[in-house]
Picture 1: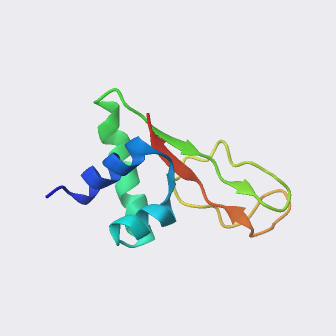
Picture 2: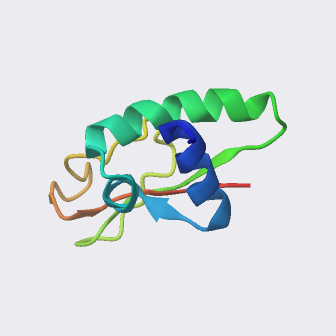
Length: 93
């Protein structure tokens, strides 16, 4: 039986997933996924692998959150103040 982090690594090695998709696949809360992602990013560095974050973007104006370091979804767009934000996706390469 593998741990949740091992299951996350296996899923993210196959294709990109959002935090919501990961939480549904593993039957855990979305908040837990974000906690695991930070640990996974650190542990992959020693294996010469990397957790890529495909950035969020604003659905209303198209602003892209490319410099964001947190794994969570932003609350509001800094340009147009819209709350219609597409959540980030993650993948291991």
